Length: 77
Image 1 (cartoon, rainbow, N blue to C red):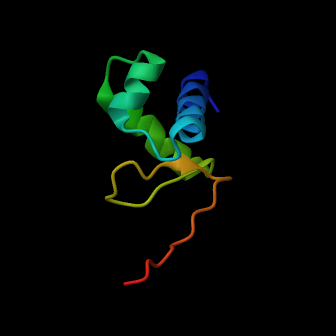
Image 2: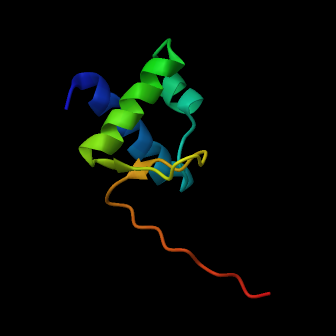
């Protein structure tokens, strides 16, 4: 894992620990000081490919570290 990948992974992990949901690309960009949204997005995709993060396709704020397990909870009507 490169230094940039590690810093973005740490940003995702810290955001999850603090708020309990995934950060946006802009949140990560602000936290890491990156100037390009596309670079952050590319590294986020690479973290998913490496298996250290998971993400639901076409869902905002769905990126999370792989160790976090989510379960679908059905709400009573």
